[in-house]
Length: 154
Image 1 (cartoon, rainbow, N blue to C red):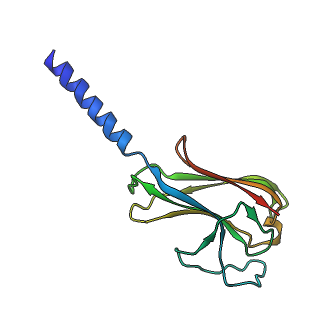
Image 2: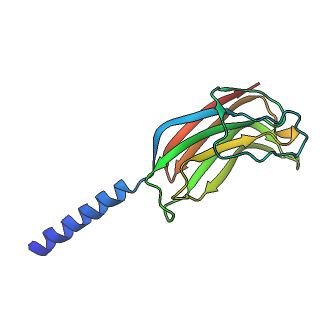
Image 3: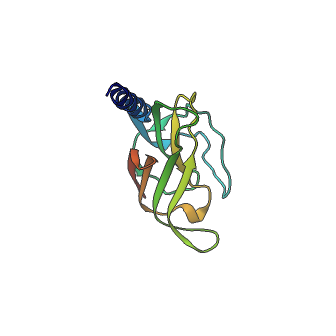
């Protein structure tokens, strides 16, 4: 009887350890437009910015070239070998350079254990990407939703 109890207790402790290892959002989620000093963007142009780029909190996003918008958040419980994040961008229908309509973009992002913050953002770098309407951003780890935000591009 003792070996069975020991095995059951070990299984419970392992399950508790796995539950504690889950990644979770810690603190508030910043969202809105990433502030840039650069004003006259050309198609295909991107401006490199620092990781601590200021975010103007808003759900209303200007529909213009060069606008970068999204979320910045802190994740607790990250480890380098943990299940990666899935970033799901639901769009009002971006027409790609190939003429195909894209209602969603899916990005898999490995966790970086020592990164203080994580970002999910979209930057209008091509004219065909600037599509007015509702944009819905979701962050998952496996089947668990960690964060989401809706934006109104006008």
